[in-house]
Image (tube, rainbow, N blue to C red; front, side):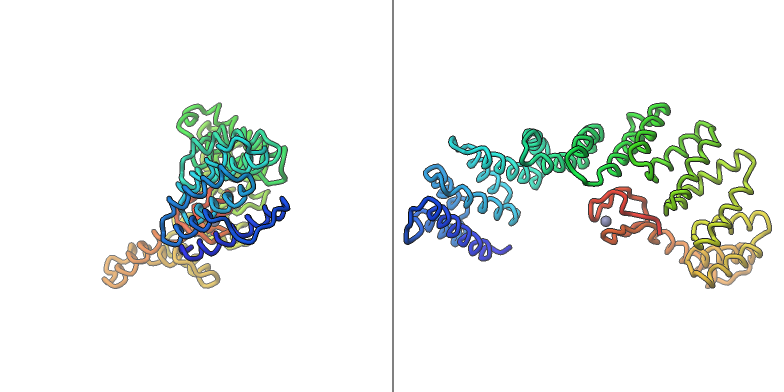
Length: 378
Ligand SMILES: [Zn+2]
């Protein structure tokens, strides 16, 4: 926002706030008080700190203009001038005769200023106090949740979310499941398999469709050589029609092989390919055909898949195998194969359904729109 727009908006806010206060108190007057005009002049001449000094003196002298100062603080925050917003909101809070509703509103504004400034410890204290009020309990709990997510304070986030569930219809369960998963993956719990299992079970108990918890629990059972339990967790993703089943393929393959039942895994891949032509399933089945029947049969399988659903990885594999088979392959073919490999390293594997953020790496929390569970494999 430019300084001109700020001043116009502020001028209107001051005039409306002042007139409203006067009309409400039945004291009619013809013009704005002189100090307000001085403050506006200082803003016009880009001396906002001097202007704030004047407005703060007015605040101390006039009980009717507190809304105007809220508007001023909000405008400074929106301009990114958070220090000035904090100063104004602190002065509102310092007023000796401030009524309860204005005090709570000032706390909400000040806490939001601290959040914008990245001063999370002060914001946390403000929102903790406000979360005990009736008026802004839900807003405060949501802000606290945001702080604890940013700070990776997962136990505090769980406690706040469990309180928030009582007061709102927001779908918080999915977030709580992720907090439990984060705890299970944290260095503090990573070494203790029993604790990790308990945390992941809590994630599923609160949000039974948690794909992340199913994947992690499957991996954990595989490590414990509890193979049947591992397969059960991985296959829950198919029961849930989850797009995350493809992420379980590597775990499923290892587990079925450990049980000496690799064929069951390849039957699963064949079924998935018939249902949805999943890229990951095609890729893994091609590797299996390569090992069991050789490169020519595997290349033929991939070529047929590529004709129906073209994917760079199919072409790359066909080229790689061709170069490996043919020692006399020309330089052009070898270069083409290498270039396809480089392109593959940067290919998009995941996309956020909410904001479109795309990535080669897996994120459970979208860095683009700050949503949990909005990213899926593509
Ligand atoms: Zn997003």
